[in-house]
Image (cartoon, rainbow, N blue to C red):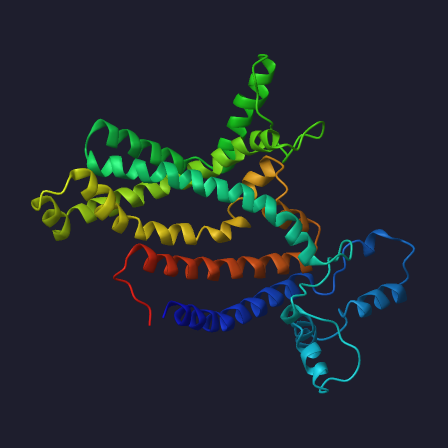
Length: 340
């Protein structure tokens, strides 16, 4: 049963997540130690005041105690009477801790920025799929033709061009250049206009450039995978059998061949979930898009290590969820795949 398989995968993923927490917390501990950002900027703080602040944050305790407190183990033990004294909730209770910069919950920052990143990345993935699959199909059906060579060149260009360079180029052409020429222009950054903005058309206008940059990178890779898978599927016996039975070429290509050819593409799309944080960071920074990638950079520069740890763990969960989603979609696309 599919749900039993999914449950087993989730159980197996728990030790992986635990390992991620150990490595992440260990690296942050070795890098930052007991650093609290901003304390060194206040000359009025006495050494005993700094020590008291670090004690309130639990930074004066050994590494293992700090890690267990962040994980939330003392809180669980306290519930069954095995841990005396007051304790804070932790990761096991869904509490990612509090920001070292402003004391606000880390989860609130993630949930505040997540909709923007979902909006941008989901639209870019959708555009990439819609464009990449037809490109791959055309390249496979017209192998060696001028159209195939053109699409191959376009894919090479898409893989070679850095995101930040393409983003700056599009801003110069469609935002700055068009504005200077008095032509209709696209916004150069942000998620909405500060003056009389925020409606659907305004949000879509702000999405055009960053979505184009992200989608261009996606379709460059995905179209090549689709082309290779289509060529492999077209050479299979079932395709020759279908043609021998008199089945129309359109049905052979788009019903039988394409359905099997897109299965490897599912894996690539599933693995794009972690790019909600990492892959779109450069684009979000260039276009001042208030997403998770920009949040990660801002908090890393500001030495807000608790938020960085929360985002790292959130990314690890997305990696596991992406792999699980890809496996489930395998069974949907190919009835021959069965999970027991």
